[in-house]
Image (cartoon, rainbow, N blue to C red; front, top):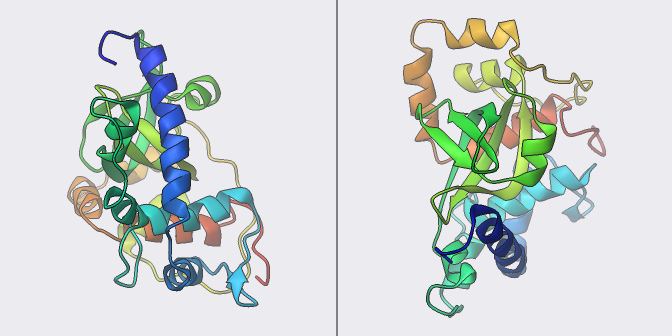
Length: 236
């Protein structure tokens, strides 16, 4: 793969990602699926009942990568049985380091894709993602789980928006709500409230702490859902 262009490697890795993550999702036990959906208030009538495809994707992402409740990640179950060819895109994706974090969108990268600035680690990351490169404006905040399967990263397929309310909830570790879901407010690039929050004393240290929290993905998804950034939720 190393002799191919970044775009060609990205295409191969994206195809492998789709196949492998779908296979891993099928290995999420019902008890784990229920735990993840309950954590995100998306379990009703003895089934996952999301209000949007994005909400369902959050449930599946937790089950595959970082389930709560002591359950084994479905990706680990897949690793125990899959034997991809050495040096293949499948092997690269299966063994990729996966890390969830909060990011600020940077400029497009001349090699393809764009730069993401990790708010928790301070790193600048080269991300290959055709949709984000075309649709995201520099300065927007988002949360995602990145797979480091090459010199560039790619997403696990789930990207959620982050606005000042989400950031404040996470920084202050505010309790989740169970009432009606908030009304959608479109996040703005270079939001002055975000800049104000990030400039406050102690915030870099708190962000670094969040980056080490194994529950960051679950807490972020739940907060984003509570605030209506992924649409309405049945029963709420």
